[in-house]
Amino acid sequence: MTDPRVPDPSEQSLWRPLRLLQAAMDADIARVYADGHIDGLKPSYVMELLRLHARGPLTITELAESVGRTHSALSQKVAAMRTAGWVETVAGDDARSKKVALTGKARAVVGRLAAEWRATEAALADLEAEIPYPLSRVVTDIERALERRSFHDRIAEKLAQDPAWG
Amino acid sequence: MTDPRVPDPSEQSLWRPLRLLQAAMDADIARVYADGHIDGLKPSYVMELLRLHARGPLTITELAESVGRTHSALSQKVAAMRTAGWVETVAGDDARSKKVALTGKARAVVGRLAAEWRATEAALADLEAEIPYPLSRVVTDIERALERRSFHDRIAEKLAQDPAWG
DNA sequence: TTCCGATGTAACAGTGCTTATATAAGTGCT
DNA sequence: AGCACTTATATAAGCACTGTTACATCGGAA
Image (cartoon, rainbow over all chains, first blue to last red; front, top):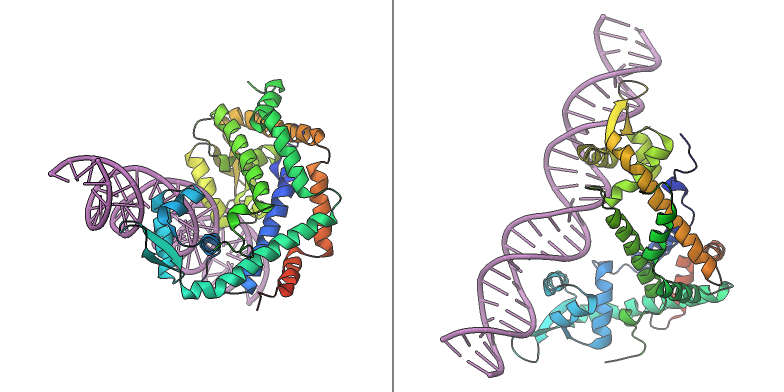
């Protein structure tokens, strides 16, 4: 029952450690947010808040396009953020488009969010400096390799060579 | 309004490319499954099917423990897989525990799933060989660095140094 | 007036969990 | 045997999150 040709996902060689590492780092980032405990702020709002802070008031449509979602999805998210008191709608260029702007409450905490963000980036940069070959270079190495031949095509080729296939 | 001290997540330096890369590779793996178009097989079932194939019939509780979920969660997943015709319940060691086993239909396709899995691993191994410094070494490098000091602590330290904090 | 553009909202889909409860079967004690 | 307790599984109900489609509204432009 332990056929070596039958891979057991639990023993996965490469993909899994990478995922675990990334999940662990994500969890640590989440812990940082939790440490700072900003009351009622959902982590999923942070990106929008920082973007509004960096770019100033944006319309729903602009926000939607910047994250590749429908206006409806963003409208709902913004509505939730408004209910939670993080954003408010101000008059836009004409009366049909409104701009989403940070509230005072949001402005009071966005500095800390930005600091957390910078700290995460800085920690990552330090981590990079500490290892022999920077992660960012590996990423671009891989990206270049995948430009030459996509991951999908590589898998398909291996598959075609596998006698158990077809 | 474009304060350089205010990070805009859309311009994120390091984390984002890594996520995008991983998402792109995930999407390619999903495409491989879609190519093979095994009717009605949800990608989320693949792991369990391969595990059952590799290890033989397992109880719900064993499956639950192996993925770190409650038995209830697994019971529901197994029920769905049973409805879809991928697994059946066979008698276990005593009458209260049942073992989850692959059906003939599942056995007919699990060879292909295993081949896809192997192909993905092989493609990954080739990709590794193609880049100057293997991803797996970077992963262990980072793991070792994080053993010395956790990512959380690194971020917290950076945060403490940030005048905008507090 | 008619249409478009921007937004809001209702209804719902789907994944993947959780808690609490139900049912049944084994185990140990008296 | 009768009882309490534990183990294994099933199921009901619901939540959190995230997203979708379809429709409604309202202001501006031609």
